[in-house]
Length: 121
Image (cartoon, rainbow, N blue to C red):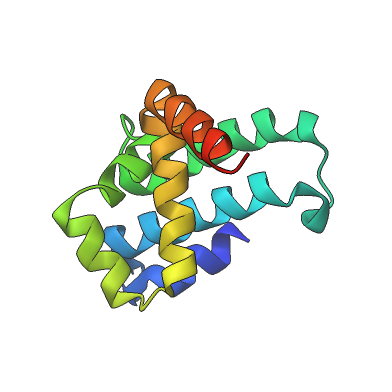
């Protein structure tokens, strides 16, 4: 799975386009969290997987970088451009933005979710 992400983000040989890598790794995490059963994981497996992905991110992007940093990147102009280059569908982009909100501003995300629930009643 991670080999495939690195392969898809490779530009020439072992050179990895770090912007594309961040789009792919955040997509992987978002999908696994949304549908852990689809990949044979239980909810208890998510924390060890998160740690493993953080190790992978640090190996590719630098020792001080984490999965959270990848989501933070998506909220930048360069992140928007990387998502454009990947030609993400609107639904895919919205999924990543949803996870950005949840991860980067959990308190604001909770308020937003409460408002949505209130409006849907």
